[in-house]
Image (cartoon, each protein chain N blue to C red):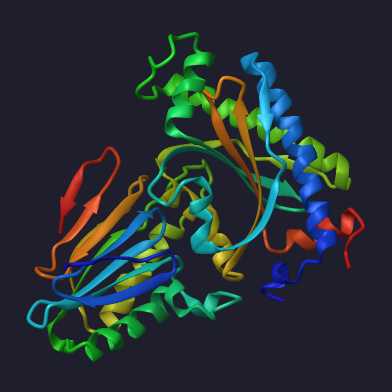
Length: 161
Length: 206
């Protein structure tokens, strides 16, 4: 039986075909899907913040782009993925509320997406597609049988990356 | 230091609950006068929750809600969030705009302004009580509105708290109108440094 594995805020999960990984209600957070299309294993991370070195508490490594990605990558490789075949798709990083003078705190979505792109480049993982920015929430689902990354919104439709 | 909210004493939690009670009581009175309807209010819950569990308070991260968000400025900065299930928000707009119940299905810009103004009034009432109680000057920012998934709306606040720790101190009250048409949740989430300021101001520092 294919299972639907839930990934909470500031968490990541890995799995294999025929399961799916889902994370609900991303706002400024970014959902990162990694997938090996041959081994059909992958992972989904729901990160909240760009950089663990800027935070006062960095115990939960799944919370930050710079620490969640390497950890999830190594877990996927343990499941049988080959590093050279792993590709990425990302979604989220919205700015939910607009104020006239947006401070850095309000722009956390944009900074999250930037940080994720940078970490992927450092890890030499190819970013195949992204759906980031805007001012609306997203629910994301990674299907581990074919690597399709589905992005659902409330009134901006549904996309497959 | 980072997770000092995990070390709050029962006395301190009681004091925070009382703040929530007075603040939300003021806000509920204001709302009741605006919509000319009796409002029931729960005793505030003061909870210390893992960040990822905060959206469960309002029905899970994919629940459809309207949220009015305000920053609190002054000596104890923080965030205020007034969250309503989307249906409740529509019902409230029906009442405010003098429409038939069930008529509002989508918010126009006038409706959005009306909801933001409600958030403004409630936050003002809440902060007045809190200022009076603590003798700290606290001022709300202009409000911002979003209608979306609860997880997405809450992420704005949770990511700020996430810099400091893995838990949120949430002072939350649920409102219900007499006829059950409008339900809402009122959240006060102090910024991490503000908590000790508030506790010191009301004399329960230790």
